Length: 196
Image (tube, rainbow, N blue to C red; front, side, top):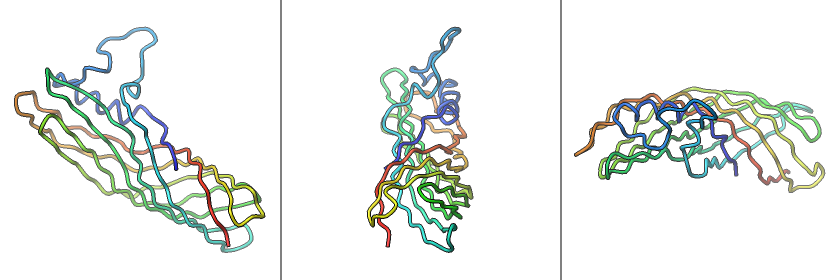
């Protein structure tokens, strides 16, 4: 199981779009000292469950296949009594070349990303989707080394592209402006594995 680092770019892009129609009631409109980041307005667990398989090729080289679903949380908003929620996410499938030495390893390789942005405002819903080629860079540690079952800690940067969402009309409220939301993220994962 992994947690995605809550970074500003997705939430700042959402804030800018919502601010145009008066939907962003959470992120401060004017701030001069000790201003919060746009990511502070987001809530929910940015979870990214991951499944991976590593195959030894040579003494130090391995191949890592992985699949993950990175959900970054929810950005709230409102306009009068109409509540808004925007949820960016990226499902990623990738392959990496891995250099492993004892307890540590690093991996790099291409990925395919199925990005989405779900918008809900009152009874109105819209889902924007995009598919992008990307990349994943990982560094990990496994222990113990000599047992079939082991624990693993991984830090991974997943470059997943952006989602373009068209403007969304909302009955009885201003339209939500079109937005381009980046969905790349950095992941910290802790898990368990089994080796043959």
